[in-house]
Image 1 (cartoon, rainbow, N blue to C red):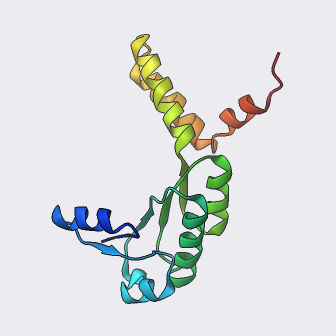
Image 2: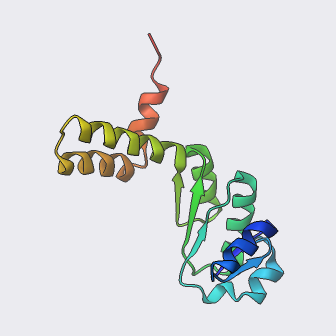
Amino acid sequence: MAFDTDPKRVAQGRSAGHQVLYGDIADPELLAAAHAERASLIVITVDRSATALRAVSALRGACPQVPIIARARDLEASAQLLDAGATHAYPEAIEASLRLGATALRMLHVPGDDIDLILQGVRDWGYLPVVEEKQEPGP
C-alpha cells in the first residue's frame, strides 16, 4: 500500500495496478484508517525533510513496533529521522557518492569483494569515514 499527496502520482500508481491512496502519511486519522500498526514494514521516500520527519514521528507514535526505513537527503536529515524513531535512514547524497566511487573502482579493475568491503565499512561505521574526511581542513 502506498500513500501520496500528488493526485497525478496516485492516478499513475492505480492505473499500473498498485494500491496507491491519496493522503498524508503523517495524518493520524489516515494511519488509523489504514491500520498502519498491522504493517510489517514502513518505507518513507518523501523528498522533503520536514515532511519525512513529521511522518516518522507520527508513525512512531501510532505504531512503535513497526520498523521504519526512511530516505534522507544528507547525514543531518538522517540523524534527525533516526532521532524521531526511524529504524534506518539512508542519506541519499552519500549513498549516491558511494555508488559513483564503486563504479570508478570497478572501472579501475579493483576486485568486487574489495569494493564491497570498503562500502560496507563506510556504512557500518555510520558514514563516519565520510564525515571525518569532509571535516578536515582544506589546503
